[in-house]
Amino acid sequence: MSTQQLRYMYRLMKRRVHSLHVDTGSWPSYKVKRMEVELLGLWAMCKVLRALKEYMIC
Image (cartoon, rainbow, N blue to C red; front, side, top):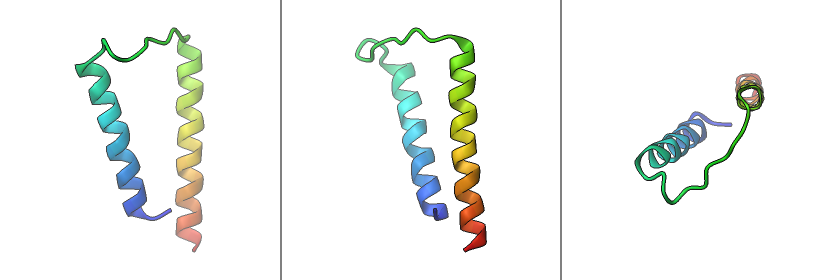
């Protein structure tokens, strides 16, 4: 994964989070437990680290 792709993904996530904070009426609210959020964060971080590892090897 190139650095441009990582920057693009970061901008998309930032926009999504910003839109959730600005307009909460149009987005459904999800009731999840804190542990589920932490696990999803760890899973996403592992995917990014794997992509960076592959990028560094190539």
